Length: 168
Image (cartoon, rainbow, N blue to C red; front, top):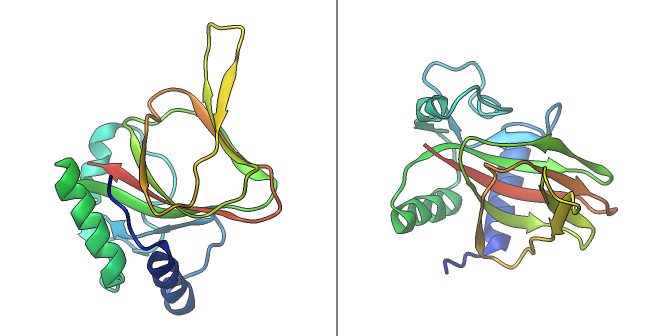
């Protein structure tokens, strides 16, 4: 039930892209990092070996835009949790992530999408192998149970950009 102004978050992302880093090579930009990391904007990229590692991402990037940081702190307060990694994630046209699972659910705020960008929840012991969902860019947060096997695919011609938050 927490609605945000996604245009302001998009503007914050543009600020980061214009002043601090690019999407390349991994199509992820982090807002939190570990102590003494080499590149705070790229430290949170990729997967982690276990749930406890999430606790190490305890530092906000020094130039994290205020509006985005404010909405993230408000969501954490509303959900009674603390954050580990927080990343902007880009899936370009005809790109995606293969089947995998995460150690805990994720919170998604969709900044840009298209009707052909899907989240697929997989089922191992069922004639239906996956159910696919489209998460809209409507300014609402979505808590997604990513502890189950899932995949992401952007089957459209426009980029798919999500702000993805990992509880610590």
